[in-house]
Amino acid sequence: MTQTQSAPPATWSPPAQQSAQPAVQQPGAPAARRGPIAVWFEGTPGRMRAFLILAAAMSVVFGLAAAQGFRQSDGALTRAEANAAQLVRIQAIHTNLVSANADATNAFLVGGLEPPEQRQHFVDSMAEAARLIAEAATAQPADKDALGALNQTLITYDGLIEQARANNRQGLPIGSQYLKDANAVLQTDSLPLVKALVQANEERVDTEFDGIGQGTIWVLVGGLLTLVVFAITLRWLARRTHRYINVPIAAGALLVLLTTIVGGAALSSASGKAADTRGNAYDQTLALSRARIAAYDARSNESLTLIARGSGDAYDKAYNTSAAVVAKQLSELNDAGLRSQWNDYDEVHKSVRSEDTKGNWDAAVALAVGKTPDANSVLAFHEFDNSSSSRLKTTSGDVSTELIAARDGLPPIGWLGLPIGIAAALLVAWGISQRLEEYR
Image (cartoon, rainbow, N blue to C red; front, side, top):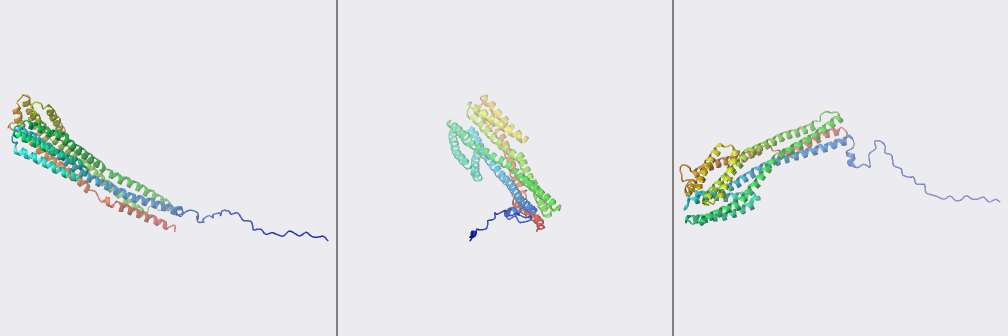
């Protein structure tokens, strides 16, 4: 019997695992793997949103730029006025010091008791200098240390002057040495501090004058860039939506344009007024102050030349140097009256030097202290002093008045700049949201 071979038992095996294949995305299917931000900026609506963000952001940036521009110009005008006032204050300190020194040296020539009015003018000048030092230290903290050092030198100077007066009343020759020492303290210790303060404040004023016009740049650059973004946005929307004007966005662009024009014009006007002040009243104030300081210095050196009795060549050269400064500064003022008054005094000075050179010391002193009726040095200098002082008060007052007027003429865009920028941004959002509604 033939034995049939049995089939091997069937063994179970798990079904073959199908290889995973990427699903083919059908056209129009949602982009599941792209992030929500990429989806939000997808297609025409996405580009509209991008333009909305760009134009709105530029609107806010413009508002900030306009506010910054106005605040910068307003601040520069304020600081220019304050620093110019401080400069006039420091120059007034300088003038009072050289004026007091001129009184002391000229009164010394009289011998014995000096003229009461001249002594009182010395006291008043020193008191005014002390008052102005305290006022200047409060007005500008940066000058405080230098003004404190100046005050210390003046204590030494005043003590030496009193020593000179006391010895001169007794006819003691040592009095002239005390006077020379006092003048040396003033020239080597006090006035260099004053000159450094003048230079520092002149630099501050120049910096602020230069900064006034920079506010215009902020407004114009910010406005032009924002208008370019608005123009690109409006053009793109017109081509995509076939509507030639988007009223809210156009209104926002108009708001930016008007702010740029009005703001730019106002800032340019303020900058122009400040430039006029700088070239006229401010420059005249500087020239007058320098002329008066040099004039008093010249008068002091005239007296010191006589006090030195034949050995005053250094003082005589110092007079000529100061007189040249006076002539130069007065030539810049175009004031014939002041030049004539200074020339009158200078002519008397030439007579003083002529008499002294010829050996007529007493005659030279009589001319210098105003004891000769035909050529009165004291009266000639007094007339120049009064006229130049009156004009200085006018020009320094004009500087302050004109800078304040320029600042007050600025519109309040410094405060309204950011609200204007936000308003333009909201108009952009409104205009583009209208077009976005059409895609829902």
